[in-house]
Image (tube, rainbow, N blue to C red; front, side, top):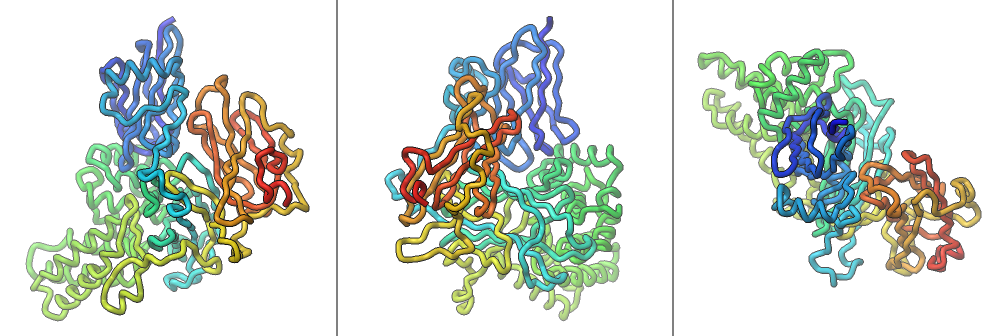
Length: 586
């Protein structure tokens, strides 16, 4: 029987370059999209293959697999989010002798790549720059909240009423946001995301509620606790392709996305259809501005976007850009176009902030040009100069996460002295009367822990923030088979002290033994006590381990479900021999 290969790129890869190498030679390279993820080779050579997966925007990741001789080999890459969550090291799948593969490949095609995984295909842990520093000193509180405007454009906020699911993947928390009862998209109440990082900043952005859902990925660093990486992307791979193309796309990427759009009915499906997604329509318009050779003229698209979605800052800036692009040849026509564009930009700035960083860049460029355009007349030139000064004033607060625009809350005390700086005295909390708390926990170097930061002795935590297990009820007891180990998997718990004797940090992990192949896509659903804000938290395997970290008090039974293996595990924390008193007796 001949040796064949079918390779499937990650399911969550929206658009990006995939390069497959074997024995130092490139086997194939193509721009993969949501509809073009599969490579097939009828007569493949046996041996070790490497795949570099480079989405538009994020850093590339490398995946290694082995083709066995005389069989039909089908290889599916782990999700890119899983590969990225593990850091910079290489992931393996189906490699019989990882050590030998590392030795061979280090001398060959992977020279210069990032550090290798250990021979058991577990992830490498990156040591902190200052391992002697006390963990408590490095730990910071982190809270992510979602709020919805009470009425369109009011900027009066109430807790978001949609659905938020959480999944842990390495050092990344993925929050999947959907809202089946969102207001009409032609004039919706905006949704705001707030991220409070203790003693660092309070970051905000307007959250696009894409058709099919929005994914918020929060990733901690192994080197610092003074920042986190935030990615806001459509959950739907097709829409995510639009986002990635705008974020860091090249003309080649843009052409692949444009071809995909045309093959599925053209731009009208995204812009003028009754079911059109406002944020997809804005992305299409911004792509047409950035890549006119690939997406065509901005004119008709800009008109449709503005007519439908003029409640957005972005639609007004797109309109201003289209007006200037279509300006006539003579001075009178150009001056009239400049006046109309200035009016659109004034309306944009009145709406507060854009959804996308490229929109903000366009606004600045247009205002600079109009402020220097003498034909506007003294009055309008002065107005353009005032708007430009206002735009520039907020530059110290502006920031982008990928293609998404965000801004920091200003320090009001410094603002009294005309100094514009982000507010850095935040305690890392958000008010629940205004926000649905999507995530609350602490970050340390390369680690996230779910739950409120324990207070020192003598200070009580706010009751609304407490994650507790009440001893009078343990409803998970006996519901998950009663065994902590079975089928090659074990549910384990490790306890750590906190600053308060009334709290303990527990790391729950499902660990596979050597009989189980490493996985970078299988999921574990940890079932917690009903008094937790989130009773089910998911984690993705990184090799042979999937784990979450919690801050708790009181003993309770944890259930772990592995849906891909139809397997359940159960562990009563209070019965573990190394459980602290706060777990055993409460």
